[in-house]
Length: 179
Image (cartoon, rainbow, N blue to C red; front, side):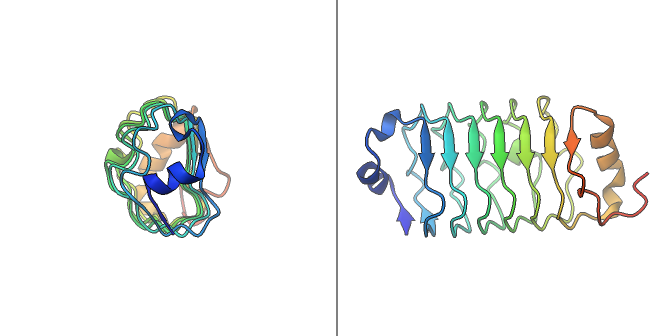
């Protein structure tokens, strides 16, 4: 099923004034880039457990009040760098159980209020050292069940030493000689 703004208007009454939108768990295979346009009051978006493999880079541009986003259990391998650029009020982001292989600081640089980020159970093998720069409110970062390589030990030491971050207990399971 392709999600369009017209389809959302048909299925949800008073769509423009909704605070919570739950689309997950459906057989969604694509979403039109304008599907969420004008939803400036939306605070929670749930797109989990779909069959999505990609999202347009500007799909969330109008979700200025969004605080929680649930994108877990999809099939994303890649996310456009600008996908979260207008979400400065986002506090919670679930991206676990996807197929993500690559992320960098551009993905998260505008998420200045982000406090919880779950990237567990993806296929991340490396993360640039500046990936989480600017996330001053981040207090929970989940990275377990990825394919992170030990050459990034210094990067992870910096995260661990910053005691505002909570690291999942299996985060470093495949790394040898962390300290």
